[in-house]
Image 1 (cartoon, rainbow, N blue to C red):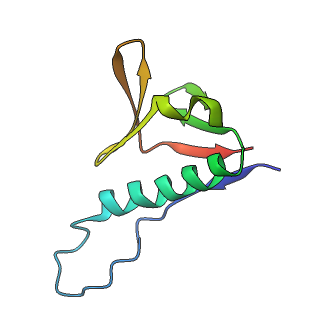
Image 2: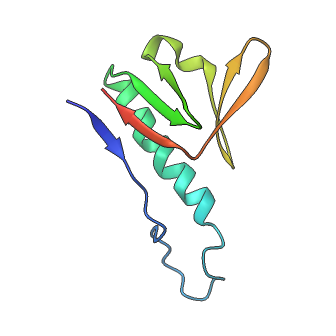
Amino acid sequence: MVWCIFVSQNAAMENSKMVANRFLKLQTVKNKAKFVNMHLDAGRTIYFYSYGSIVKFTPKKRDLLILKKDGFYYMAGKKLTFLGLCKIAAE
């Protein structure tokens, strides 16, 4: 079974006094981080589909995945490679 996450542009922001979509990118990253952690904890493989490439993460290689405010990064040698806010699927 393949699990996919799609986060809409209308992520849950409760405070009506805030500037519209002020923290939308951060909220999107948090939602995707929950999805990734949930499936890695369950022992599933995570696939990041970004810019014509597919990056595969197993629970064993979880340490290579880094989360920052603007999206996901992974260690490629000594450099961080940006994955962005791409499509994520778990198998």
